[in-house]
Amino acid sequence: MTATTRIYTAGMVVIGDEILSGRTHDKNIAQVASWLQVQGIRLTEVRVVADDMEAIAAAVNALRTQHDYLFTTGGIGPTHDDITVDAVALALGVPVIVHPEAHAILADYYKDKEGGLTEARLRMARTPEGADLIPNRMSGAPGIKVANVFLMAGVPGITAQMLEALTGTLEGGLPLLTDTVGGWIKESEVADLLRATEKAHPGCQIGSYPFFREGRTGANFVVRSTDAALLAVCMDALCLGLEERGFAFTRGGI
Amino acid sequence: MTATTRIYTAGMVVIGDEILSGRTHDKNIAQVASWLQVQGIRLTEVRVVADDMEAIAAAVNALRTQHDYLFTTGGIGPTHDDITVDAVALALGVPVIVHPEAHAILADYYKDKEGGLTEARLRMARTPEGADLIPNRMSGAPGIKVANVFLMAGVPGITAQMLEALTGTLEGGLPLLTDTVGGWIKESEVADLLRATEKAHPGCQIGSYPFFREGRTGANFVVRSTDAALLAVCMDALCLGLEERGFAFTRGGI
Image (cartoon, rainbow over all chains, first blue to last red; front, side, top):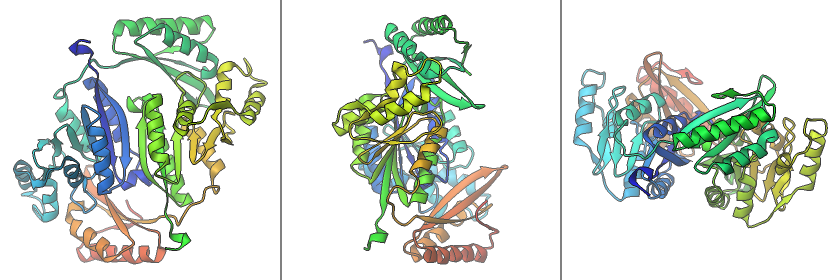
């Protein structure tokens, strides 16, 4: 195995009662997942936990030790239910400090704003000891990097900015390439083809994603590989198989 | 503690490479979470795992033993990447069988359809031994209940039907009631009020959910309690506090 074939993986902990109550539809899993794909890092497991110190710390410790990177979203704001910093510090066994740089950023951000840098706002300068900051132009309050753990916001627009700031800074492996073909095909009609095609093309995985749309049944078939040439050969074989069976299909998916 | 105050909890395992790659935005977490709320069951942890036998079995075993109920979504279709039945059987230590009733349902469903009941379609009649079925009018293929584990579809519309079939059949506790107030308020300006109000009202939790919308900052504050009277008193106190501080707000949230 050469260095370029090493697979980098990440875990993710989504923190928030509002996700578990169904009140808020999480948008961060898909956002972080897509971003990681581009960095050549595979998101391997996500855990969604409540605003509960022990639950957060347990999930953080389980996933940070299993993966190259761990991302958390949620719970880094100014209110009493924002306890992610404390929970991650607990998980890492380090104290919580007021980060001088974060303090300066917030003092500057709030200097012209009503109320100024209140005690509540200063909570957003607290980090586990030994942390670096992840810039956030939108609201001043930075994200936090400590060891291999990245603490991001719950608000998707802010997390998007933090991811942008991190783009290209994390070591990754070969990105997983994908290609899709789809049609108004019942997946059960081509299950044997999918299985045989995957088996005949080591290094490629085929996923089948059925849907109901406009009152009809269809499916998209996604081929994944880190090798562009293998991917192309596998996709061609799959399309040939669909053609031979008389199915209409669309490259790129429907 | 009387019987009515027992808290019932559920875990959930979302299965699918497509969620972890960011290709598909999960809709089942919010759907299952909202449905559980109405049943008086609290969704306490969700894990999203890949189409990987060991990963699914490990997540299923961790959560089914910690909670009254466990729900899985995804991986119960007819294709080679649908391995949830096998993984749950592995987790429970029981064999996989062809369920006679599921076999009959599928035979009936496919009797007029092209291809009939193929080997691939018959895969959807496989269950862990000792399972009951969860009806699904949309595609014939049933969901599966085995011990305290409920296997549901990945396609949200099908899972919706399975949840409907289960409505009122699971023992739950008191539902968690919620009430919301919101406004164009920076949560950092009211963090002290939120904390003090929650502290003064045992039996209630207050969550703060900030957002950026139309270029402005706002937040919704959600009070939760299993006791309607406590909830009302806490919400009144919170609104009074917002009023005293000169904030405009909307009952029900914005």
